[in-house]
Amino acid sequence: MVVRSLAAVFSVLLLAGSGWGWNLARVAEASVSRTDAIPDDGNSDVNGGAHAGAAMNLLLVGMDSRKGLTDEQKALFSTGDADGVLNTDSMMLVHVPADGSAASFVSLPRDTYVSIPGYGKARLNSAYARGYNAASGGEVEKDAAGAQLLVQTVSQFTGLRIDHFAEVNLLGFINLSTIVGGVEVNLCAATQDSYSGADFPAGVQTISGTDALSFVRQRHGLRSDLDRVVRQQVYIAGMLRNVLSSNLLLDLGKQQAIVEQVGSSITFDEGLNVFDLAAQMQNVDPGSLSFQTIPGLTDAKVDGADVLKPPSQAVVNDFFATLTADPAPAPPPAPSSAAPALAPSAVTVSVLNGSGVSGAAATAATALTAGGFQASSGGNAASTGTTTVRHRTGDEAAAALVVGQVPGAAVAVDDSIPVGAVQLVIGGDFEGVGQPVTVEAPASAGLETNERTATDTSCIH
Image (cartoon, rainbow, N blue to C red):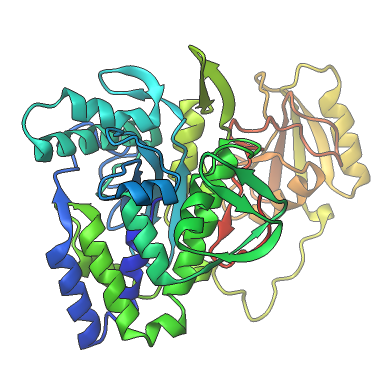
């Protein structure tokens, strides 16, 4: 149950160029609660201080708090009586690139087993409570300490600097989801959970208010806690579709109600400026909002408690580094007239054996000769596990022809090689000419992220 705050702000973004839009932004800016959530230390990017640049990483948190709910509402919403609960119910890290063209929402499941600075390993949702309970002072100081420890924990886990923080409670979600209107969801199978009050048939249906809260809070009757995370993503995506719709764009009353609800139930860090956020994201659309979950999480038990164990820290860091990487530059335009095709007969190939397999170079040279190349064995090379095609600067086309005969081979530039010649160094991964090399999959390969956009309405469990 996170990101409701951002959904409300999006309504302002759509109107950023109008006087009405900036009026709403001023209302939101003036009325939201603030907390000193961003710590001075323990919050950095493993790829260097300049890695994020003008991009933004926002931590969105749903608090498992019944604050503001009457006894009747607690019964109606099936929330129970946990008035003292400080655990964070759900979290998402939202990355917005510098040009504001998209937003990537990554769920951080509450049961993820992580290192909490100063406390050892525990479930992620306990970080806020630990910081809150250990702090001295009043409610303001304790809230700030809880948020800061959570930010430090997420930064350490993801390898990213967290720039901003936003928090919402159960009552804020209920009110905001009612204002935005019914959200269409699609369930692959009927489901029921007496603890959350969830009772939904299979198929497409529209939910809001009380049903929405039951939908995103359901924990029982699902295949795993990761299904719950997907439900949260799908509902939030639906809310964003509603907020970004032309109907809401034309409804000034709803726009003001959303912004006022944000002001009464959302807490931002002290440095988050609604105007800056509006300016950065005014061109976003549902198709450029993506949702996914940290890959490689596995169910486990620690001291009898259910947890989700993440993959290695290197895999987690690689995932988030890819998420925040600058977009690849567009390829240069194709020349108006194609250069003459290079024939294998114009390429001289010297084959060196670094595999340790006797006769491998001679065998490969014979096969390349049969393919039309001017190939010969060049003897042995230093032992290597990686088959590499080496070429001089300017001979990329010749090297590409050889790589075509050994798919997956590494390519390297070596200006000591004669013009027009290519060197094939056979490594331990070599399977023969015409066969792809045996490449060991990277640590993060094959990890399912279940990425979906805000326009995806396929069924979920």
